[in-house]
Image 1 (cartoon, one colour):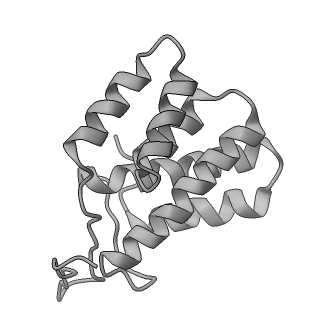
Image 2: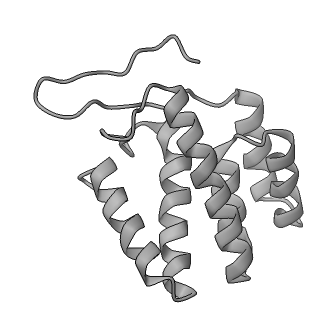
Amino acid sequence: MTDRPVNLYSSGPPETVIDPEPAEAIAALTEAESAADPIAAIGSVCTQWPTFLAAWASLGDAVAEPALKYAAYRTGYHRGLDKLRASGWRGSGYVRWHHEANRGFLRALAGLQATAAVIGESSEDERCAIFLRQLDPEWPPS
């Protein structure tokens, strides 16, 4: 559990920021993304840091098979919900893109939405699209 409180704004819903990842994990992911075999290298990062949301989103980005993309993004999404709850999120409020630490979760959710559309999961595509806009009303990022 984090010691950082959820910010409450009198003008709107609370805003949650996920705790940042260790610098070592970020460096490993950066290196893995440019490896000769990025899928295997990113997969190793996911194995070493299984709660590293950006790694799961990157794995989803790297694989071509829609079922594997879906699995990677869904893992990042569910791990992200766990991290959000640990950061004080109670099922509503903002999780904005402009906070770097939130981007892995939002990338995983956006990837899940896009892949759901590809595989014909229209209800999940729609649910994810709505959820993204609820989390960050300025979605998609520019």
